[in-house]
Length: 70
Image (cartoon, rainbow, N blue to C red; front, side):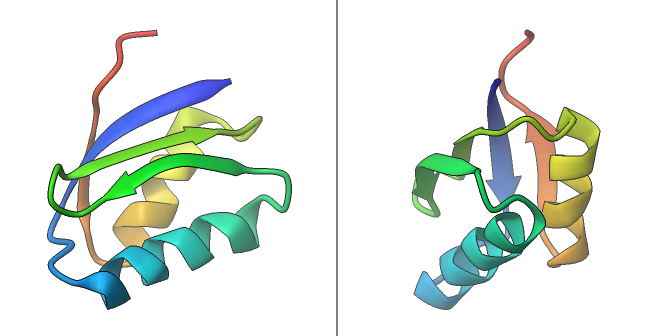
């Protein structure tokens, strides 16, 4: 299932890498479709529940909100 998020607080490549690694550690089958600190956007394809994905990002220290309504 595809999930789109607005993620604020990512200010550098290290921030992007931290979010990417945390998501990939949680779901080895995840596909990260977009991870863009400039646009504050993260789009993934994952079978994990949306709330769990959001918590992973929050645990890395970033604010997250749902972009899509699905």
